[in-house]
Amino acid sequence: MRSGKSSIIDSFQIQEFFLDSVDNVALESKKVLSLSEFLQTLAMALAAKNIETWEHSVLVTTYAVMLGIQLGLSQEEIEQLRIGALLHDIGKIGIRDDILLKPWALTADEYVRIEKHPEIGARILEPSRALHSIIPIALHHHEHYNGKGYPQGLRGEKIPLAARIVSLADAFEAMTSGRLYRRAMTLEVALEEIQLQSGRQFDPYLGQTFVEMIKQEVSLKLGDK
Ligand SMILES: [Fe+2]
Image 1: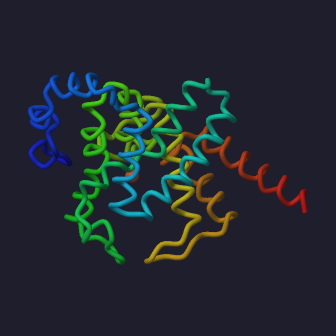
Image 2 (image 1 turned 180 degrees about the vertical axis):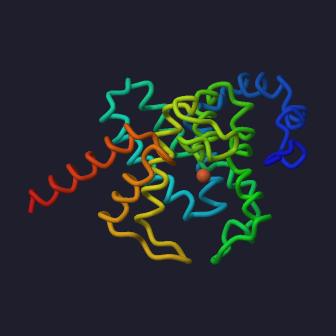
């Protein structure tokens, strides 16, 4: 089995420390925590854990929102996509640094541990009802269209649309950015890889739309010069 509850934080135990009285105290002193403030706190925590994960998330968000706009999503869907993409890897806060920062190949056991980050992310977001709409992004951004991803092995359109979008943006950013252990791919090679993986790792329609969108963006930029 890929996951075991015992290895993942349990938000219900944490709730015991933050009873409703905390909300009342905050209201009385007129210091209500806004959603924007809370999101900034989560983002700061992720950046403090690992600045590269945060910088990666910012670029993933740019690509995901571009694709969302291209697909004609509503303003509300785009906003969910934006916040969900920024926090898609929030669960990496729960991964040990010696695994998260390892500059060479992971062992099978380390892979099992790092593959827990989507479930840890969902647990982190769970206590905030205002953030429930982005849990599917945190939980399912490593599912593959052919059902061979994780954590639940969801297939095709059973994977929420926003998670399919972030999955593509995530992979494209990872391919085109250098890492400690590998060089960045050229744009052409990364787009070929997305085409190759469309219908396997990625939703084929989204993959095609993404490739065309990036090519158009590049030709517009070249045309500017
Ligand atoms: Fe991830």
